[in-house]
Length: 526
Image (cartoon, rainbow, N blue to C red; front, side):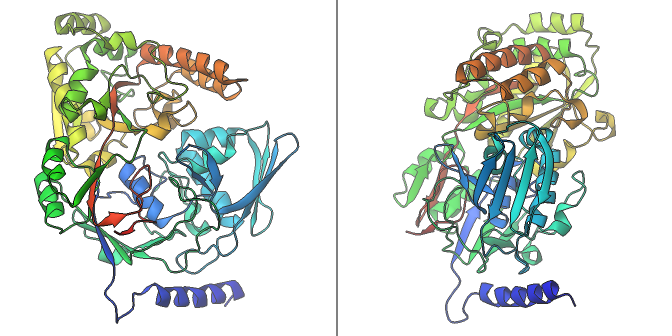
């Protein structure tokens, strides 16, 4: 037996023993209702936010993002930059271990970054600028760049999807187009595959071998991550009333996304706290499949802009509670430095469905069936689908609304087959707010065809503008390019933005929540 294998096995046995709660004390369990079941557990393979949230229990990232959207070392102890910004050396923290007891090495980091970059727009931009990525030693990762890339920490610590997680080398070398199903991370919690009940329960167990970074303050995904619960149980409750009653009765501790219609009921319970954790929100998205008719035709996609009223969509999602939504939204998160209203006038004003019907016919629509995926277990996304189905039918489109759970949508949207062979034409989601701050992470605006996000649009102009943004000299130049990107976006229309939605979360008996998405370190009994 190799020495490293022997030591790893011994360490793994010790860690396993430490991970078990004391038999003399009841385990501290946090009972949580997530946005949906985790149909896919590989946080690189999918852009589903529920999988990203799962990923941050099991895995860790090289850098963390603060609530001020700065990036700080996380798994990395620090880095050096030489050769006018073209040589980066990242040194891993001491004491990092995977859940099987093996040390985290630079040799694990290199294929993990490559696999992530193969699936992620920001990661791919980093690799496009990279001449050499290698393990200089067990703890030092070297990036030799073709040109300076000051956004390197942002690419390796981004909080949107996909997650830049670090896996053991044996999993990280998996083809990026194939899912990793065995979860061995180095994060604060282990994934308990033996307790997984599809559609009902997902369990995570505290990893006693996790060593929080020293120094810094806990903020978003940055800083020390301390665990105060032995177990976290994700309990799947698709019915909102069931979740609300369970929270009110103390049967669960935390409901990630209470529906707006039940917030009033929950507010009347003094023990229930309601809070908005994510100031960035998410942009509602009607995503087209650009590979197959009818939406392989940009003119047909453009014609449908006249059928979209963002106010109608956001009202369907959150009613008249204007603190929870915004309209006049383009492709960048509202109230962020690069947000612009350029081109959004097309989504403003009274909708004329008969005019849209005529424009669709002129563009070449011939009554093709439009398979629209409707996730009924995501109330806020289901609302988008219902409004869109009605609008497109009013425009004379042959809509086939296919209802299912979100997990099924996540798997089906990956199909590139025609809709009559298991594919799709339209699906709905929310583009995570932090992904939409700039063109680096905004996966919906890519026009790189087969390498693009689900829908696979092609637009060389969008790609050229994005490349210009990376080399812009200052913020003013970046803003000007983003305005041009948005104008071109409304010409190519890879998707239609439906407004920005800011979800609330509800919990009882807890304190220590981090801003951003649902995270489970620092949370403790109140």
